[in-house]
Image (cartoon, rainbow, N blue to C red; front, side):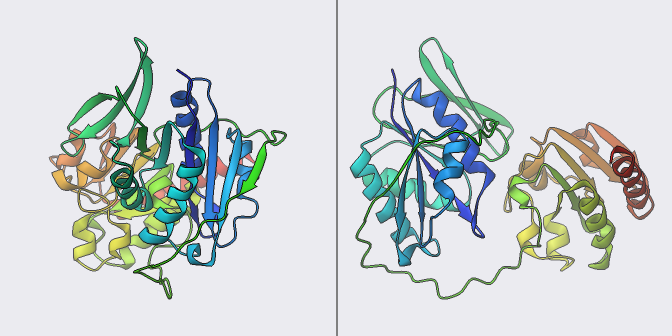
Length: 326
């Protein structure tokens, strides 16, 4: 059954996040040959429509309003509900990000709809769309089928491959006026503590440090390796609690959940709370002086040694490979 599916293009720091393009790929499967409509919300949405179309959206609806300059639940829900009321889709896809986790349940409640959150894969089996999502902190997976009503899902970043960008692809981009009023929250200013560079939740490579880094300065070799590999730096809760780094870098059950192609754990013991946030990484490399550390049980490759000796050596070798490939 072909469906019209809306995809919210999520904007961060003036550009679309990669999960927006992954959501379009998911929407293509959900639509089953129907129409995929991108949605761009913000105070200035110029340029976003073209990008969404180049990654697979058939057309785009934009809503520009001063109250959408920064994300608020009230403002974005009113804008998205306005688009939904106008388009009357059979499916909606958002990224399972901080924004998506806040906005999607609110929209589902307003629409009296079900919601399948944190989807890591979807496939068509026996005429049904089957959505897979992790449960019990990633220890198990459940499969869900939507038998009736709106197909409303959020997808975990870095799990569904985006379509190839087609610079020559074109489609209609229209604007919609939505009356946004009675906002209970107004964002005056945003102070970011997160490190500059690659977004941790979407990074393909993550170098993470634990208590074994011993100090704030101990993260410097990790940052250097991350820079060489074009990755991001993360941390365990232990490192954050010890004030070695900001909590914005925390990975785990009470932090960010990440699924990079390569995860290098440096000086991390492997507490179950940390494993809940990174155990689904495609390749895990553990560096620890303790050969009995729990992190080695989930690692694909393990290095028993001092991270302050191993990490600089890795950085040097990767730098040589990078220079040799240029």
